[in-house]
Image (cartoon, rainbow, N blue to C red; front, side, top):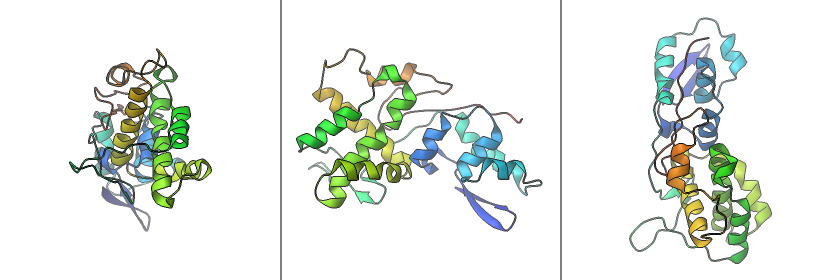
Length: 217
């Protein structure tokens, strides 16, 4: 993160992929090369406010800070927490949750998005998988309605935690449902080849890699 001032307000600006929330990460897919949109995404400031801001002290440093969006994103392959929620670890100290409830598993299955829907939809569904898992962890009992209510909360959690966890759940579901649908994504290949204006990774887990070139408009 870096800080800059807009008027009398000090603003934190994401300057690395690890600084982004999952919501911001999803927003990268919608960028069209406009540097102001990139700054708006990384700062949380309204696009129109930035457009009308006039002179910005340290503008060149600000533009440089968001250039990380021109590089492939890389996230850890695993995580020990999602937001404020600590995850139970296995005997090796690794995140490897086992689904124990049929209704929870079925709700995750219904939320699955296959590669024929595009990389954005596949990635966005990570928030739903995580919410379904975290809701039971938070409340001690599972409720799909409450899980749905957590999706927006999950989107505001760090992308570096949601992406590896969401990818883990998708791979687990696909392994358990092997052969259920021919169009189900071979993760490493589908994400490697899907390029909706972005560069995606060779790995599914924490390595979904959007990147975008920017220009001044």
